[in-house]
Amino acid sequence: MAFNSTPIGSNKMKKDSNFLLEKDLALLRRRGRVVTYAEEQVILKEKETNRRLFWLLRGSVRIELNRRFGNIVLANIRAGEMFGEMSFLGEEEASATVIANKEIECIVIDGEVLDEVLELHQGLAARFYHTAAVTLARRLRFQGLTLK
Image (cartoon, rainbow, N blue to C red; front, side, top):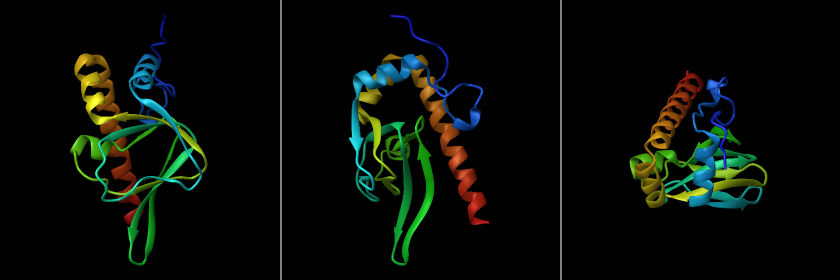
């Protein structure tokens, strides 16, 4: 089977911060599982231990901080982007709550499985970490702009 070597979401759209190839996503789909979450369903809860990575295939989620005075929406993530990467990379508890805006579908891959995949497929590892770095940098930049 031949795979398209074009990055998902088009490499021309660097703002999407996605450098994974179609074959990378196909491998992640095979090694993970595709899960559907209902509208308003909590996917990750702030301060919970999480060692899973989520790749959003359909729909969008919002990232919230839960505070005494209410919830603060930090970001909205759309199809073609990942979330849970901070917990995966830092091996720490979730820093925020992730909630489905509408019904969503995503690839969920356990951290131990992703570690194995990245160790075996160095090209995928480079593209994955590049995607994660650009994604985190973009989100931090956005947060800095919204706090000003």
